[in-house]
Length: 197
Image 1 (tube, rainbow, N blue to C red):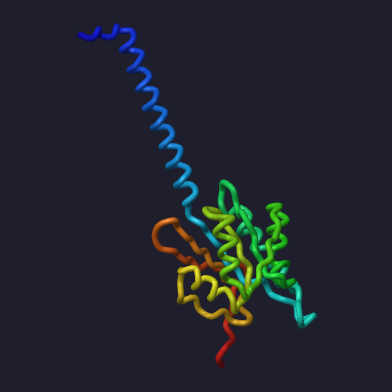
Image 2 (tube, one colour; image 1 turned 90 degrees about the vertical axis):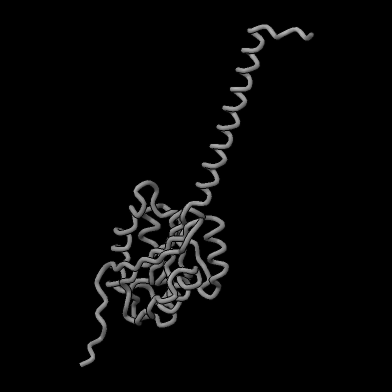
């Protein structure tokens, strides 16, 4: 007949098992927390560049009204997330988009990442690989924003943006699980459609 273990030895083995179980539970909790954090909702804010100047025709900067709108965009977005704020800013290489982004970039001390307006796949690949779970601002053009939003699987019903319409701000939320959502807001001086009189 085997000798029974002394009480002290049994207690020591039980304590080791408890410590091992606690360590396993802590490791599982850390892994789950990391997984859910890495799968957090990504929010992309889409804005058209502000009002452009009349000249030069090939690559105009912002007009005085455009500079006012860029300042308003900065006021609206500098505290977009009360904890961290905008994490990245993307703009096409044109002066009007860069000048729209610059006041906010300066305020938040962020670089402006240039993207090719004709390569949506590269833009989304870059955003979703580098900024998953973050808040990103993308400044584009009236003819590119509806397409970009639709390609993300958000709303395919984004109306065309008129040539003189600059006040749209689209929030696209991309959850790690579930449906992508689009919210349309307005900022700055309102767009007034031309009179049909």
